[in-house]
Length: 306
Image (cartoon, rainbow, N blue to C red):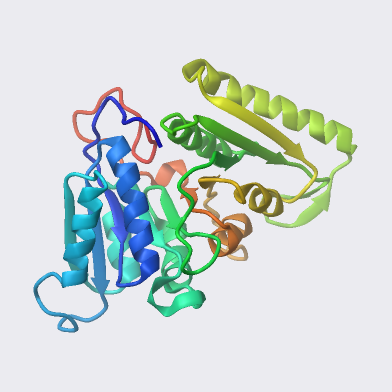
């Protein structure tokens, strides 16, 4: 990635870390982003029970903090918090600009962070959450490539596009890939599937109109951003996984559901977290985002990158 933002950001980028290589990859990936944003970086290690580690900061955590500072993230702070990782990181997400996690944790392929920590956090996190991963365990995340975003007709899709465009605009190649999928099988407000009476060509036309409306203000603000559009008769998960193969990051919006029958984390977000070959960012619903910093009149709301 190429250039830093002109205005520094007081909200921290928070990374949940343990001793795993995956957590180290997440910390260094987040350090690069924090440096571009001009934001502080906080490395948080959660210990489930008090007394299980020495009262001082572990040497591996101090070394990880030093590596993050060498990557350009200044200031970098480290901390040990006692209690379940999900609770501690959820608390740290309040007021954070971004929360990052490794994808595999200290138990290898089974994915301690992506499974027991990331998925509950996606449902409740108050800032964008990124799960940092490569193609396979032990493979670092990609360092270059476009930002890929899934866009639909919902507010969640609009928020994902705004985040992705701002992030792509500070990238080395300023490259954004926008993916919209369509099908005649849809779900109603209760989550029940049904078919709609529309030909594929008509659904594709509606998708093109949607992207045109959504992208117009984005391109006005960022004329140098290179945008590719893909309107596909496919499922969102399959289409995004396909485009993730060459991506630096995939971004999706998360819709909050009040249904007792639907899972709190959508199937697309969950599938990307578990299977994407690159980092995945999930944007929380607007009503759960934290308020802007005091005195920050005129700035974007928390959870929106510049």
